[in-house]
Length: 488
Image 1 (cartoon, rainbow, N blue to C red):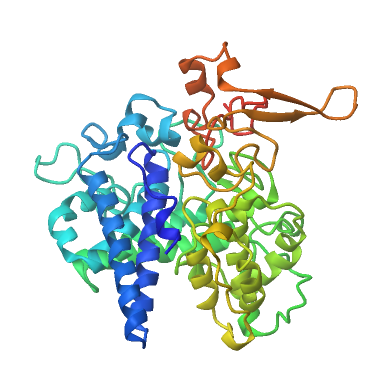
Image 2 (image 1 turned 90 degrees about the vertical axis):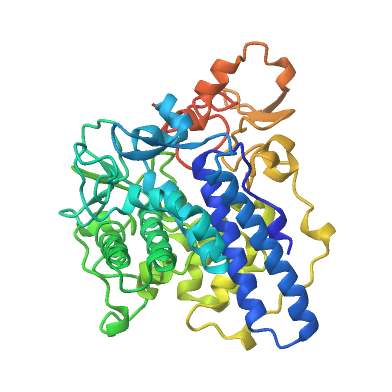
């Protein structure tokens, strides 16, 4: 109930963030639907039904806002190149992570397709009113043919499966930006999420067994196989303690050297190279979790228990500091291997500090539906008062109005890395002196930043730099003057 009141899609949000938050609402609606369906108490069922209807109402309002073009970052059709692009991205090549130049379309639109499929299943009237518009997003990333620009005007003009390279066996996220090493992709799981969303939408729109649905299944299956082959790695001799003679624990043979495979996850796969880093940093946490999120039913197909066991034992369990916004993903990952252990960690998660596309309700539901979860062995969630639930640390995004209004989760002022995002006010910044003396603290506020202008703020913002994916606020530089790795 609390989760459906926070991190809601806002009309001012960029298209990527809006989609993530709409998909979050969609999952919450499906969880409420499951609870209503399995409730045996009339009074509880009535309360759950009210919650379910309220959640679906919010989901419907969000998607109607998007498809009626009442949001600020409107979607438009590009008749020259045949695609759906955001208006911000169309007029600023670096806005929306390069969406206007066809970067990351499958990352962005997969969330919207997923949300639309859920709403279409729960309220068929949505399909009748907005089905053609959702179809346009579907065709942007999952069109099953190639149409020439000279084709009759009534024929849809989209490239076939825009991001998928069939020879390579997976998608590339790059759009029209040239790189010396060719196209590349880091978030293999968001790529899978796109085709999962396309498959769900086609089930609702076209039904099982249709040509479009079968093609979406093909996109999904090949993307999962590609991610397991080129992103997920386990050295030939893993220290996870598992018996690799057991058929269930057989690992997919790695295509990389044993030394490179010690990283367990590729951060970015390019046409000419691979490396264990991301556009926004080389932290192992980023490398592994950007290739895990979002947490959906598709994660069970993408991540095998044997792989997750080795990944968690050798990498994730050894991480000493995990930012609040990433903790939920690490716990969900662990749940695939050890659901009851993960359940204990999930109970400690504070929902408002999670990533804006995820919630504690989703996390608990995911953990308890993993194979091997035993309810009798799991601690019962305690009843949290509203006061307990919403007491946040001063550094949390929810404690800073500018960050809260942007629906950011986790730590913002500062982040775990000590950076102050652009949404922070009255920022207390701690910096170390160059001669190694004790740290000194300086305080600044927006009113003192006389040198800041609207233009410089825009240029410094993360969304103005295509490679600073999944980050908010200022990146290039951040408020403390640091240039992040993703800056170009």
